[in-house]
Image (cartoon, rainbow, N blue to C red; front, side, top):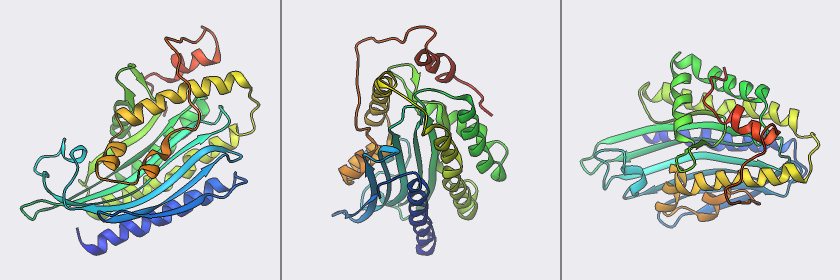
Length: 301
C-alpha cells in the first residue's frame, strides 16, 4: 500500500470522527473533550469523550493511527505468514451509552491494517461495521438500523449485507451466555477483495451510514419517560457489554497487546453496571420481551 493511499484513509477517518461528534453533539448540552495522545512505540490518536451529558451518560469517538515493528498476537492468530511483520493500523471506533434506557447503546468501527512481512510482501485489509444494543427493543428501530446498513452495502454487491449481517451475529455473541449482545448490524474484517479503491469506498459507505442509522432512533426515544426500574435493567444488561468487550472483542485485545492507550481503548465501558446471580426477567414483561423477541436470530430487513 502506497503512502498516498494510507494518507487518503487517514484523512477520511479524521473527517469521519469530526462529523460524528458534530452529528451527535446536536443532542448534547456538553461539548466533547478533545484528548490527543502519542504512542511511544509509534503513532498516536485523538479521543473525543463525553461523560454525564444530557443524552450520553458516556460516549467516545476515538481515532487512532499506530505502527510498530511486530504485530501483536491478536492480529496474527488467524492470519498466516504475519508473525514478525511490521504494521500500521488506523481506525475510528465509537461507543455511545445513552442515559435513557429506551435509547440503545451503539458501536461503530471502521479501520485499516497494513503490514509488511519479513519477506517484504505488502498486505492490507479493511474492516468495520456497526451494531445496536437495545435495552427495550423496538421493531421500528431494529428494521431502520438494518435497512440503513443494507443500503450502504448494496452498491458494492448484493450478497454483502447478508454475509456481513451473519458475520455480525456470529461475532457479537457471548458464547458463555449463549446469547447475542444485541440486535446486530454488520461486521466485516480482512477485506480487500474489491481492490483498494472499491474496498475503501465500501468502508467509507459504512462509516458514512452511521449517523443515518442511529440519529433517527435517538430522536424517537430520547424523550421517553423512564424510572428506576428501567435504569436498573439497563445497568444489568450493560454487564453483557462489559463481558463481551473484555473477553472477546478483537479491537480491545489488539489495542492492549499493541501497547495502545488504555484510557482510549477502555472508553467503551459503560459508567454504571450491575451483575446479579442467576437473574431472570418475569414472563410477559418488557424486559422479558428483549430476550424472546430481539435477542434472537431474525432477518430484520
